[in-house]
Amino acid sequence: MLANASATLALTTPTPLTEHPAAVYLANLSLGSRPTMRQALDKIASLLTNGECDCFTLDWSKLRYKHTAALRAALMEKHSPATANKMLCAMRRTLKEALRLELIDPVDYARAVDIKSIKVTKGLRGRALSEKEITALMEVCIGDRTPAGFRDAAMLVILRGSGLRRREVVNLDLKDFTPSTGAMLVRLGKGKKDRTVYLPESTVGVVEQWIDIRGKTSGPLLCQVNKAGRVVLQRLTPQAVLFLLQKRAKEAGVAPFSPHDFRRTFAGDLLDAGIDLVTVQKLMGHSSPDTTSRYCRRSEETKRRAVQTLKIPSADRKKG
Image (cartoon, rainbow, N blue to C red; front, side):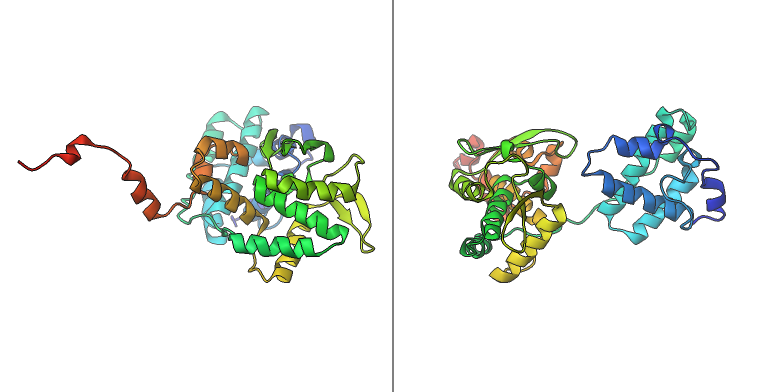
């Protein structure tokens, strides 16, 4: 990307991980976030050095404004605004660790990170699932009387009824679910924060039916079922959730969707029902209500009806 960049930005000697800014940054992330952000840092290092370096062989302390500004321009061409901004954030955080480790001069650091985020003009990608589609998916799972059918039905009601991320769903353990209240304890969600969410009472029985088949042995709440139909107490992967949803969607004749679309449907339905933004924010595990507000899908007619509830005396003044 930059002329002779590989020669000037590559580490000349290996650095201990405890003193390497990228390693320190990644170590402070949750286990679920590390692979994604490691990949982002590797791409950045590759762009800056014409493919010569990854995030651990790049000397982050040598980055200057000319490098980061050129990187921003390259990311704008290659990636969507959201992806590019995520990568720029990873770069800024890594440079912040370089500053804390006293590897980069404060002035050089301030100039290097003084680049604007890329403006995002598009709305959220994905779609909300209709009640008809969700019913079709549930019917397919309920119609499958194998252990896999019971498990997938439980997975569907958890995704639909709690708004959890798929990584949070697979990380649930049996002990995290309380049938009497429908409560589920999410341990170390995004941002390494714990939170409690609740399933609708009408769906608790679906999860209990799966537990009856799964057994009461400690371990992951949702686990694998082998080809012989036998329950294996090994945790599902986030990728497995995607695969299982694709399989059930095909069986139900439902148009393609992502696991995150359940989360989008959950938030949108609650906001449409008039649930306050802060409550939805807490259920979603967002650090900012601004993020939650992006899931609002209220129509112009909804907004028009809302202002009709306002009582303004001067508006009722009779003509003299």
